[in-house]
Structures are given as C-alpha cells and as structure tokens.
Image (cartoon, rainbow, N blue to C red; front, top):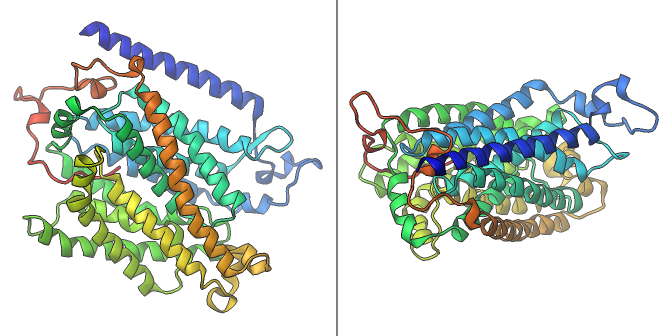
Length: 458
C-alpha cells in the first residue's frame, strides 16, 4: 500500500511544518531572554529582583536534566524489536516540539508586560513537561502513528502545564522533583489515552508483537540504566535555586536508587523463573526508586528514610508487573506497553503520600534553615504544617482527575478515523518514521529476538 505510506509521510511533514511555523511566529511576537540573566537587558519597568536566582542556576544542572530527558528516556523506548527504532525517532520528535510548546504555554501563564521571558529555569521547566509526555507515550507505544503522537504532545503539554500551575503556583504545593506533575500525571494520562484507543480486534496481535524485545534489548537497557543513575539526582534537584537546598534531594535519590535495586534482586527470583533479574527489571527498579523521590527527596531528613522508601518502590515495581498489569489488560482493557503504571504511576503516588506525611513534620526544629526553602509559607507563618499537608494531599486526587479527563479527551481526538493508520497494516506505526530492515542472514529482526520478558518503561 505505497499510496497510504506516502500519504502518512506527507501528513506528518505537513503537521510538523504548520506547528513549527506557529512556534516561530509566537516566539517572534512574545518570547525574549530573561532580564534576570543579564543586567544589560534589565529596564526600570521590569522586576529584576530575581536576577541572582537565574544567574545562579548553573549550566551543568540544565545540561544534566536535558541529557536525562533526551538520552535517558529516549533510550528506554528502544527495547522493543519491532517498534524500537521508530520509537526512538518519535522520542526525538516529541522532545523537539514539546520543549518549544511548553515554553510558550508556561510563559503565557506568567505574562510580564505582554512578553514571555525565558532563561535556564524556563528550559528546565520545559524539560520536565516533556518528560511527562515521554512517560505517557510509553503507555501507547506501537499503537499510535507519529502524527497522533505529535498531537498527543500538543494536548498533554497544555494540560500538564495547567496542572503544574494550579499545584505549584496557586496551591503552593511542594513538588520539586515532580512526583505528581511529571510521573503521576504522565503515567495516568497515558493510561487513559490507551484505554480510549482500545481496539479488541487488533490489540491482542499488537501486544504479542510489542513483547518481542529483540536481541539488543539488554544493551539498550544497560545504557539507559547508566544514564538514569548518572543524571537522575540532577533531575530531582533541578528546581533548587539555593545550593544548600540541593544535597538532601541528591543524596536521598541515590539512597533510594540503591535500595530499590536491591529490592528487585530480592523479589524477582521469587516471582519469575530466573536466578537473577534481567537488565530491564533493574532498569524498572531504577526508575521507580527515582520517581518516588520526586516530592519527598528534599523533605526526608534521614538517610535511612530514603533507603526504606526506595526499598518499598523496588518491591512495588515487580509486584505491579506480576499482578497489576494483567488486571489492567483483562479487566480494564488498558494496554500498558512499557509498564508506566508500575514504574511511574504507583511510585509517584507513593512519593506524594510520603511527602504529605513528611509535611506534618515541617517545623523549625526538624528542618532548621531549610524550612523557608521547602515550605516558605509555613516558615512565614501564613500556613500551619497541617494546612500545608492537607494541600499536599489534595494535590494527588486533583492531578489524577486532570490526568484522567485530559487523557480521555486526547484519546478521543486521536481516535478520529482520519488520524488512524490503515487497519490492515499493523506495523505502520513504526514504519512511518523508520523503515524496518532485514538483517544480513535474511531474517526479520523482530522475529530473532529473545524470549518475551517483562515490558520495561519509558
């Protein structure tokens, strides 16, 4: 069906062209570099009181976050033999578009004299929003074409930014490492899109194809896991402006990573017929241990607390794959290709609940000088610790509600017949960006993989 493939490519090309022209025009009309980053750009009409905050935001931290999003998340979608190469290409497409769109949408919520002023912190906030989209894409990987994925990014960035604005700016919730606004929102947004896109006559065949991990799965898993270990502590602490606020989040993330990995080595041999976990399972534990530290990382005041939390996250992840994923598929008709519910959704909820409990301990005796950095309103006396804890708790159902409604809306849009690939070509989702090749022996690479294993993550 060459005419269908040509139409698909032209449709993607046209949509990319229109969206990029729109971004260029909006950037030309509204976006300027932040006056806080340069005294020469600061005028009496602008408030430059936060200049030191942006200038103190070091480039290495921004670089680490960007590498984490582009390489860490990008490599983790390459484990599927049939959809791997195309999925990596789609990840690059999502990052390229979502960063631009997130800067615009976030900027419109903080208009200053009719302009959007951007700096290093703006780019990091855009990377956070992009990470949420990449997480969601893991739930629908192999079941949507590039055009649908681009529209998913367009809608999710808008809704993710709205959720972040409500929680962080209006409610004053503390979520520096984004347990709620990235991990939880991204996971359940993607799951709801997957539910709306459910097609009983096609999902069974596609699920079998997607579980074929290919002969290079462990190689990609190793590289992706190493990137996670190196850069995730920077991702967790990226929004900390003051240097003395960083160590807790960084160290707690490392402690959580080691404990969650040990938990996987304990539980996986019990649940599966393997003496040691596969690399993709260690990869899952790494993400779960980091996701749970998103909110609680800067609140935990003792190293053993981070070890306990990471250990629990490491137990939840394999248990989720063993028991929750089959329920999602059989009862709720939700096909979670990369297991984002187990490695992002459940750890994100655990991190949010832990953050709420730790907020009750927000006193000057417990936090010392850090109280003003983590909970400024509590330190100023505008709120009590109990009031702040209640808001932290309310943020969880609000995020789930927005993610659920947003995912349903996005799924309904993506289900429009004009956006779907021809039903008789199950592999068009991949070949829209990447033509599958036959190896030197003449064997199709998607049939030469290892025995299907546990789906990993994005």
